[in-house]
Length: 565
Ligand code: ATP
Ligand code: MG
Image 1 (cartoon, helix red, strand yellow):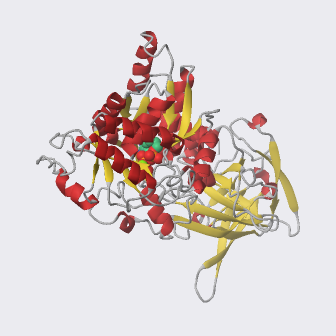
Image 2: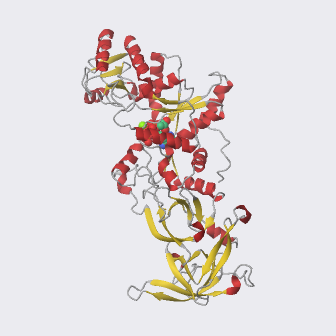
Image 3: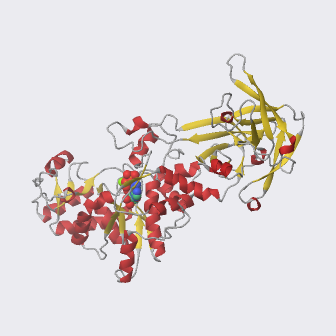
């Protein structure tokens, strides 16, 4: 699959927008919005919505608003608001002057509610939340009318004013739409429009003690902003009749229309802010920017690029059917993006010492190595020091190799990348544990690049670093956060499927000295090990921390096959 070929194809949303433009439906305007609730950090699912909303607007010369759906004062926080803005900007989008807050519309929403009361379309109800639930009925059974449904317009007006003035206790009353308690659509059974919450709001402080509900706020905020295409996820399909009802009955100057698309679900992770908050609060992950969780801040910290995320979102497309997207597709997108962008260097994650017995003690050679072997002129070269003592990857040595093990083993030869062919002569063990602590080898001086036997073939090629020259760094390797594809689709608590091995910290990895000036935020490929990112938070002058963004897949195997390694 080729992620670079941007989806030039269309989708049903883009088809609707194109048809509206052709028929000059909204005078050719396209205004969308991304409406997050500031109750957590954005995740890759939100990115799908951001890419769609901003994408559709930009492609059609329109605009996309960023609107915070901040109607729930108890769960929201400025921390989240700021983080969301940062994430949307990081993804590469700009809302210009159209930064909006539903809370800015509280005054108008109040007037809209009064309008409904005046039309006899809303009433103040004294049932408790529990009673409302019981009166609502079920999918099979119609609901029951509230005993307060028949209140007069004047009484409703008066009571709603009192609610607003703070005269009623929390939870003692609500304002409800008067629609149909027998509707087969539960969201049409006299839904709550306003509730009492005597808590300050992070933007309006204590100006209000009643707060509008999501459904009411959402569609009417779209109306206030003149949104032409209100895009949302499928779970709101059932709410569309209610959305339309509010718009029709309130009758603001602009009537928006809602279109639903499938939300993104990704395998081996969870996406809901509530679930992620649960993991964060219980300390099961290391904060909202833990590189293992699919928040945008976590993915940024891991080293994902906005280009890769955008390309992934375009690639998965927009459909009307829910599905579970394989996380491998996301990994493909980041590999594809970084493949052409970053240098290749050598880093040994789990070092095993190799002493080359016939290499003169105290001697050092500087070997020339291209940063981008596929096309060396592109990124130039660096010098890699070679000496008598080097490190190779522990897993690249086997005392009793299995049949297809083509790496180092007693009596066997391998090539050291950019250097010589070496042969294993013997091993040295720890006397107590029996563990191999050192491999003794000899090298063939004719086999380096330019030497008489430079072309001599051996089956394996290993990466390595020179022991006296390398730098010790920390490498963090991530695995899937959960052990099952869909941790939410089960009876057990999703947290019981957490992968205990989702993080492996290698505190003494050894990297070639060309990386000594690596800066926080740098990305690089460690040959055979994957793409890595210099952790901007934990890297210090003392120690560089590398996060593995994604391992390589088959790249080395392919190179070996093509005879280029
Ligand atoms: P969550 O359950 O994670 O909190 P949400 O839908 O409640 O998600 P909002 O802040 O209300 O989060 O979402 C803002 C926008 O992002 C909405 O338009 C919503 O439909 C969209 N969105 C949220 N999650 C996804 C997803 N997984 N895939 C696509 N769009 C999503
Ligand atoms: Mg929500």
